[in-house]
Length: 193
Image: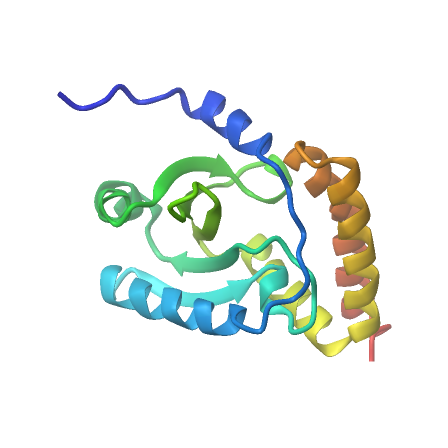
C-alpha cells in the first residue's frame, strides 16, 4: 500500500521552518552544479526542456550561501511535468512540492528537494514555465557575478538574516526581497557598470 500523501501546504510550512545555515563559498559548488545538470539532461524529456541554469548564491563565485545547489529548469509544458517528470524525479529520491513562485505568488512551479543521508538539503530543482520571474533570477545572478560590491552587500544581508531568522525561511526570504528588487532596478537603469 502506498503511503498517504501529506497535505502540501502543511509540508511546505514544515520546509519553511527548517534551519538556515549560510556557509562560506565552497569552490566545489560549480562542479556539483555541472553534475546535477548532466543528470537532469539524461533524465528529463528533451522536447520539454528549454534551458537549465545554475541560480542562487551558489552560482556566484566567492559568495557565501546555503550549501544547496539551486537549479532552474525552464520547460514548455508544466502539465507534462506533473504527469511524467514528477514520478521520475521522485524515483531518483527527490521530494516534490507544487508551490508558488518568487514572492509566494502565482504562477506555480514544480519544486524538487534532494537530501543527503543526514537529511540535509543538497539540491533544489525549480521546474518552471519561462516568465519574468525566471528571467529575473538569472539577471540577478549575473549582476552579482559582475559586481562584487553588490555581492558583498548581499552576503552581509544574508548572514544577518540567517542569524535573525534561523528557522523562518519565509522571513529570511522576505528580508532579501527589497535588496534583490533594488539590484534588478539598478541593473536595468544602467547604474551598475
